[in-house]
Length: 291
Image 1 (cartoon, one colour):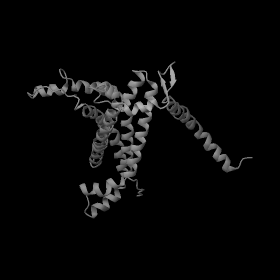
Image 2 (cartoon, one colour):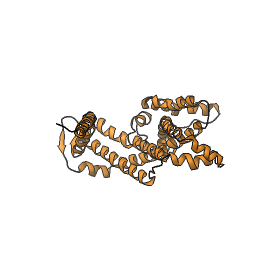
Image 3 (cartoon, one colour):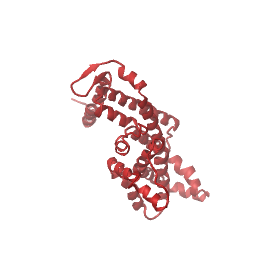
Image 4 (spheres, one colour):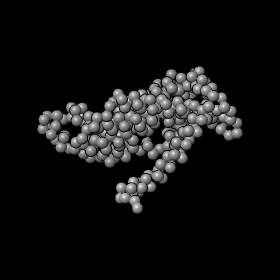
Protein backbone atom coordinates (compact mmCIF):
# COMPACT_ATOMS: atom_id res chain seq x y z
CA UNK A 1 0.00 0.00 0.00
CA UNK A 2 1.57 3.27 -1.11
CA UNK A 3 1.64 6.26 1.22
CA UNK A 4 0.18 9.62 0.13
CA UNK A 5 3.72 10.99 -0.40
CA UNK A 6 4.65 8.03 -2.63
CA UNK A 7 1.43 8.43 -4.62
CA UNK A 8 2.14 12.12 -5.14
CA UNK A 9 5.72 11.36 -6.24
CA UNK A 10 4.47 8.66 -8.63
CA UNK A 11 1.87 11.05 -10.11
CA UNK A 12 4.49 13.76 -10.67
CA UNK A 13 6.82 11.24 -12.31
CA UNK A 14 4.08 9.99 -14.65
CA UNK A 15 3.32 13.55 -15.79
CA UNK A 16 7.02 14.32 -16.33
CA UNK A 17 7.88 11.02 -18.02
CA UNK A 18 6.58 11.90 -21.53
CA UNK A 19 8.59 15.15 -21.65
CA UNK A 20 11.68 13.35 -20.28
CA UNK A 21 11.30 10.60 -22.87
CA UNK A 22 10.95 13.22 -25.61
CA UNK A 23 14.17 14.95 -24.49
CA UNK A 24 16.10 11.66 -24.35
CA UNK A 25 14.98 10.59 -27.85
CA UNK A 26 15.25 13.91 -29.68
CA UNK A 27 18.03 15.69 -27.73
CA UNK A 28 20.25 13.44 -25.61
CA UNK A 29 20.46 10.52 -28.05
CA UNK A 30 21.30 12.65 -31.15
CA UNK A 31 23.87 14.57 -29.07
CA UNK A 32 25.66 11.34 -28.07
CA UNK A 33 25.55 10.08 -31.68
CA UNK A 34 26.95 13.42 -32.81
CA UNK A 35 29.93 13.06 -30.44
CA UNK A 36 30.57 9.54 -31.75
CA UNK A 37 30.32 10.72 -35.39
CA UNK A 38 32.99 13.36 -34.76
CA UNK A 39 35.56 10.54 -34.50
CA UNK A 40 34.62 9.10 -37.91
CA UNK A 41 35.09 10.02 -41.55
CA UNK A 42 31.53 9.56 -42.74
CA UNK A 43 29.39 10.52 -45.74
CA UNK A 44 26.26 10.12 -43.63
CA UNK A 45 25.12 6.98 -45.45
CA UNK A 46 27.24 3.88 -46.07
CA UNK A 47 30.88 4.94 -45.72
CA UNK A 48 32.16 5.33 -42.19
CA UNK A 49 35.78 5.01 -41.07
CA UNK A 50 37.20 5.56 -37.58
CA UNK A 51 39.86 8.31 -37.74
CA UNK A 52 40.33 9.21 -34.07
CA UNK A 53 41.03 12.91 -33.49
CA UNK A 54 41.69 13.80 -37.15
CA UNK A 55 38.50 15.86 -37.41
CA UNK A 56 39.55 17.90 -34.37
CA UNK A 57 43.07 18.45 -35.80
CA UNK A 58 41.46 19.54 -39.08
CA UNK A 59 39.21 21.93 -37.14
CA UNK A 60 42.18 23.84 -35.70
CA UNK A 61 43.97 24.00 -39.09
CA UNK A 62 40.91 25.04 -41.15
CA UNK A 63 41.20 28.80 -41.99
CA UNK A 64 37.48 29.03 -42.80
CA UNK A 65 36.66 28.03 -39.21
CA UNK A 66 38.61 31.05 -37.94
CA UNK A 67 36.68 33.33 -40.32
CA UNK A 68 33.35 31.74 -39.35
CA UNK A 69 34.05 32.13 -35.61
CA UNK A 70 35.06 35.79 -36.09
CA UNK A 71 31.96 36.53 -38.19
CA UNK A 72 29.64 34.72 -35.77
CA UNK A 73 30.92 36.77 -32.83
CA UNK A 74 30.76 40.00 -34.85
CA UNK A 75 27.08 39.33 -35.67
CA UNK A 76 26.53 38.39 -32.02
CA UNK A 77 27.89 41.80 -31.00
CA UNK A 78 25.52 43.59 -33.39
CA UNK A 79 22.59 41.47 -32.23
CA UNK A 80 23.20 42.03 -28.50
CA UNK A 81 23.83 45.75 -28.97
CA UNK A 82 21.22 46.70 -31.56
CA UNK A 83 18.58 43.95 -31.44
CA UNK A 84 18.16 43.92 -27.65
CA UNK A 85 19.12 47.60 -27.32
CA UNK A 86 16.58 48.89 -29.86
CA UNK A 87 13.94 46.55 -28.42
CA UNK A 88 14.59 47.99 -24.94
CA UNK A 89 14.31 51.59 -26.16
CA UNK A 90 11.09 50.84 -28.06
CA UNK A 91 9.59 49.02 -25.05
CA UNK A 92 10.31 51.98 -22.76
CA UNK A 93 8.86 54.45 -25.28
CA UNK A 94 5.71 52.42 -25.95
CA UNK A 95 5.15 51.90 -22.21
CA UNK A 96 4.99 55.67 -21.80
CA UNK A 97 2.29 56.27 -24.40
CA UNK A 98 -1.37 55.97 -23.49
CA UNK A 99 -2.85 55.24 -26.91
CA UNK A 100 -1.76 53.00 -29.77
CA UNK A 101 0.17 50.37 -27.77
CA UNK A 102 -1.59 47.47 -29.53
CA UNK A 103 -0.75 49.00 -32.92
CA UNK A 104 2.96 49.26 -32.11
CA UNK A 105 3.02 45.73 -30.64
CA UNK A 106 1.58 44.35 -33.88
CA UNK A 107 3.84 46.38 -36.17
CA UNK A 108 7.08 45.60 -34.31
CA UNK A 109 6.24 41.91 -33.87
CA UNK A 110 5.23 41.39 -37.52
CA UNK A 111 8.74 40.51 -38.91
CA UNK A 112 8.84 37.48 -36.57
CA UNK A 113 6.10 35.74 -38.54
CA UNK A 114 8.04 36.07 -41.82
CA UNK A 115 10.36 33.16 -42.58
CA UNK A 116 14.11 33.74 -42.68
CA UNK A 117 14.10 32.56 -46.30
CA UNK A 118 11.61 35.25 -47.33
CA UNK A 119 13.53 37.92 -45.43
CA UNK A 120 16.77 36.79 -47.07
CA UNK A 121 15.18 37.09 -50.52
CA UNK A 122 13.73 40.49 -49.67
CA UNK A 123 17.05 41.94 -48.52
CA UNK A 124 18.84 40.32 -51.47
CA UNK A 125 16.57 42.41 -53.71
CA UNK A 126 17.27 45.48 -51.57
CA UNK A 127 21.02 45.05 -52.07
CA UNK A 128 20.89 44.10 -55.81
CA UNK A 129 23.05 46.33 -57.99
CA UNK A 130 20.80 46.80 -61.06
CA UNK A 131 17.24 46.48 -59.69
CA UNK A 132 17.82 46.89 -55.94
CA UNK A 133 15.76 49.27 -53.82
CA UNK A 134 18.82 50.95 -52.28
CA UNK A 135 20.40 51.72 -55.64
CA UNK A 136 17.04 52.99 -56.93
CA UNK A 137 17.06 55.56 -54.11
CA UNK A 138 20.68 56.40 -54.92
CA UNK A 139 19.73 57.01 -58.57
CA UNK A 140 16.73 59.15 -57.56
CA UNK A 141 19.06 61.28 -55.44
CA UNK A 142 21.48 61.65 -58.35
CA UNK A 143 24.17 59.50 -56.74
CA UNK A 144 26.24 56.64 -58.18
CA UNK A 145 25.05 53.05 -57.66
CA UNK A 146 26.90 51.07 -54.99
CA UNK A 147 27.93 47.43 -54.61
CA UNK A 148 26.43 46.93 -51.16
CA UNK A 149 27.70 43.42 -50.40
CA UNK A 150 31.50 43.40 -50.62
CA UNK A 151 34.15 41.42 -48.81
CA UNK A 152 34.48 44.27 -46.29
CA UNK A 153 30.75 44.94 -45.76
CA UNK A 154 29.28 41.42 -46.12
CA UNK A 155 28.98 40.65 -42.38
CA UNK A 156 27.32 43.99 -41.62
CA UNK A 157 24.89 43.57 -44.53
CA UNK A 158 23.97 40.12 -43.23
CA UNK A 159 23.55 41.42 -39.67
CA UNK A 160 21.01 44.10 -40.68
CA UNK A 161 18.11 41.72 -41.57
CA UNK A 162 18.94 39.48 -38.59
CA UNK A 163 18.61 42.45 -36.23
CA UNK A 164 15.47 43.71 -38.00
CA UNK A 165 13.70 40.36 -37.81
CA UNK A 166 14.01 39.79 -34.05
CA UNK A 167 13.73 43.29 -32.56
CA UNK A 168 9.97 42.74 -32.17
CA UNK A 169 10.47 39.47 -30.29
CA UNK A 170 12.59 41.08 -27.56
CA UNK A 171 10.37 44.18 -27.63
CA UNK A 172 7.37 42.09 -26.54
CA UNK A 173 9.37 40.34 -23.79
CA UNK A 174 10.78 43.60 -22.39
CA UNK A 175 7.48 45.48 -22.65
CA UNK A 176 5.77 42.68 -20.72
CA UNK A 177 8.47 42.87 -18.04
CA UNK A 178 8.05 46.65 -17.74
CA UNK A 179 4.28 46.22 -17.42
CA UNK A 180 4.86 43.96 -14.39
CA UNK A 181 6.51 46.80 -12.43
CA UNK A 182 3.96 48.17 -9.91
CA UNK A 183 2.73 51.64 -10.90
CA UNK A 184 2.97 52.60 -7.20
CA UNK A 185 6.77 52.72 -7.55
CA UNK A 186 6.54 55.22 -10.39
CA UNK A 187 3.98 57.33 -8.51
CA UNK A 188 6.21 57.41 -5.40
CA UNK A 189 9.20 58.32 -7.56
CA UNK A 190 7.18 61.09 -9.22
CA UNK A 191 6.38 62.60 -5.80
CA UNK A 192 10.13 62.56 -5.06
CA UNK A 193 10.75 64.48 -8.28
CA UNK A 194 12.07 61.49 -10.24
CA UNK A 195 10.62 61.13 -13.74
CA UNK A 196 11.56 60.84 -17.41
CA UNK A 197 15.08 59.59 -18.13
CA UNK A 198 16.01 59.40 -14.43
CA UNK A 199 13.02 57.15 -13.77
CA UNK A 200 14.19 54.77 -16.47
CA UNK A 201 17.76 54.63 -15.15
CA UNK A 202 16.99 54.20 -11.45
CA UNK A 203 13.72 52.22 -11.50
CA UNK A 204 12.88 50.55 -14.79
CA UNK A 205 16.28 49.16 -15.84
CA UNK A 206 17.29 47.71 -12.41
CA UNK A 207 13.89 46.01 -12.04
CA UNK A 208 14.03 44.32 -15.46
CA UNK A 209 17.75 43.51 -15.36
CA UNK A 210 17.08 39.77 -15.13
CA UNK A 211 14.83 39.88 -18.20
CA UNK A 212 17.46 41.84 -20.16
CA UNK A 213 20.04 39.14 -19.34
CA UNK A 214 17.57 36.47 -20.48
CA UNK A 215 17.13 38.36 -23.77
CA UNK A 216 20.92 38.47 -24.23
CA UNK A 217 21.14 34.72 -23.62
CA UNK A 218 18.38 34.10 -26.19
CA UNK A 219 20.16 36.39 -28.67
CA UNK A 220 23.50 34.60 -28.24
CA UNK A 221 21.81 31.23 -28.61
CA UNK A 222 20.02 32.42 -31.75
CA UNK A 223 23.18 33.69 -33.43
CA UNK A 224 24.90 30.34 -32.90
CA UNK A 225 22.12 28.67 -34.96
CA UNK A 226 21.95 31.16 -37.84
CA UNK A 227 22.48 29.69 -41.28
CA UNK A 228 19.35 29.96 -43.48
CA UNK A 229 19.27 33.73 -43.85
CA UNK A 230 23.02 33.88 -44.58
CA UNK A 231 22.64 31.03 -47.08
CA UNK A 232 19.95 32.91 -49.03
CA UNK A 233 21.60 36.32 -48.81
CA UNK A 234 25.30 35.67 -49.52
CA UNK A 235 25.92 31.87 -49.30
CA UNK A 236 28.80 32.82 -47.01
CA UNK A 237 30.53 34.88 -49.69
CA UNK A 238 32.16 36.70 -51.18
CA UNK A 239 35.29 34.57 -50.59
CA UNK A 240 33.81 33.15 -47.34
CA UNK A 241 33.91 36.64 -45.82
CA UNK A 242 30.36 36.31 -44.45
CA UNK A 243 30.64 32.63 -43.48
CA UNK A 244 29.20 31.76 -40.06
CA UNK A 245 29.54 28.56 -38.05
CA UNK A 246 26.00 27.29 -38.64
CA UNK A 247 26.23 27.72 -42.41
CA UNK A 248 29.72 26.18 -42.59
CA UNK A 249 28.48 23.11 -40.68
CA UNK A 250 25.50 22.83 -43.05
CA UNK A 251 27.71 23.06 -46.15
CA UNK A 252 30.15 20.44 -44.86
CA UNK A 253 27.31 18.04 -44.07
CA UNK A 254 25.01 18.46 -47.06
CA UNK A 255 27.25 19.89 -49.82
CA UNK A 256 30.55 18.09 -49.13
CA UNK A 257 29.01 14.96 -47.48
CA UNK A 258 31.60 15.29 -44.68
CA UNK A 259 29.22 14.39 -41.85
CA UNK A 260 31.98 13.49 -39.41
CA UNK A 261 33.65 16.88 -39.80
CA UNK A 262 30.23 18.64 -39.65
CA UNK A 263 29.57 16.83 -36.34
CA UNK A 264 32.89 18.22 -35.02
CA UNK A 265 31.88 21.76 -36.07
CA UNK A 266 28.52 21.35 -34.32
CA UNK A 267 30.33 20.41 -31.09
CA UNK A 268 32.46 23.55 -31.46
CA UNK A 269 29.23 25.60 -31.79
CA UNK A 270 27.85 24.02 -28.59
CA UNK A 271 31.08 24.64 -26.64
CA UNK A 272 31.38 28.27 -27.80
CA UNK A 273 27.69 28.92 -27.13
CA UNK A 274 27.81 27.51 -23.59
CA UNK A 275 31.06 29.34 -22.81
CA UNK A 276 29.71 32.67 -24.07
CA UNK A 277 26.41 32.34 -22.20
CA UNK A 278 28.29 31.40 -19.01
CA UNK A 279 30.55 34.46 -19.32
CA UNK A 280 27.60 36.79 -19.97
CA UNK A 281 25.72 35.35 -16.99
CA UNK A 282 28.80 35.81 -14.77
CA UNK A 283 29.45 39.38 -15.94
CA UNK A 284 25.82 40.46 -15.55
CA UNK A 285 24.99 38.66 -12.34
CA UNK A 286 21.29 38.19 -11.72
CA UNK A 287 19.98 39.88 -8.61
CA UNK A 288 16.74 38.66 -7.12
CA UNK A 289 14.59 41.76 -6.75
CA UNK A 290 11.12 41.47 -5.29
CA UNK A 291 8.49 44.15 -5.48
